[in-house]
Image 1: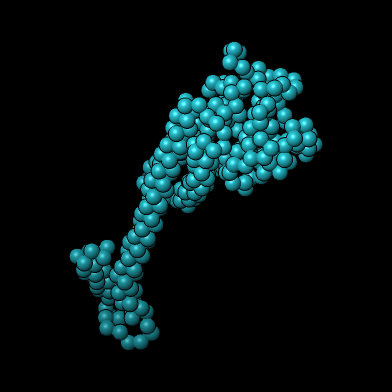
Image 2 (image 1 turned 120 degrees about the vertical axis):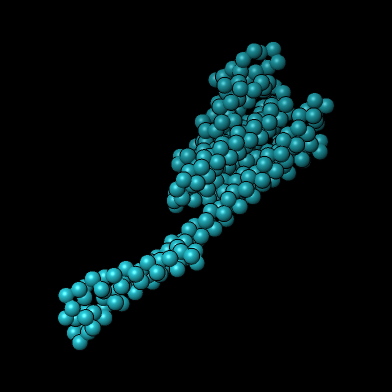
Length: 308
């Protein structure tokens, strides 16, 4: 899908237009091969730039060619299974247009279309910086969501620990690894832009990119802290499971030993040989009382030793 939008300083709203116009924003989303070839030909863009922006494994980076600039960053998103992951988000800056390329529908594009933040398509550098701000905000939002989800799972675990809760915590831990990798790679891109060597920026733009770099570092620190907490939590749960298992095994072993004496007495009197009291009409009660006494003695002994 290829869409064209434009908004100048004088315009109040972002307008969708039918075809290319100088100063417009070109939104490319899940394009077909024919559309990729047409974009490359019509706008004289290296086709590998488009393909790299659509490659799920692409790393964040900046490239320049014939006056055009390619910026690839990683953004968070939810997949079909409701798992939070990251994917590449390509931005191509030309002197006549700004193009965004995304593998699938995502929150960044929806926020631009719904004008959740103000942009002018003719101010291409400022437009890009606003996108970077939104990327950081989305990372922060998803991180807050993961934090609340992990706390909810921890509350469930305090009541009943099952494999389902452990799997969910491991899934959150994996997502944090994706986030950490994406944030570090994005910071390299932001730092290059902040250096002023990629394109010229006004003082206000420099302040914005500096805030973006700072925000990116704060998000990374938040991810790092949450990963440490989650790792310690999982270790604690593993210790709890192991300790509970030891308690259960100790209890079952103690019960087995206590009952074994009663079974031993019953086994002796089950032998087909001459036995004491075998002709006594009260022999059954003697055996029962002896078994109960041994049971009680061993129970009190184990209880005193805190083995039960």
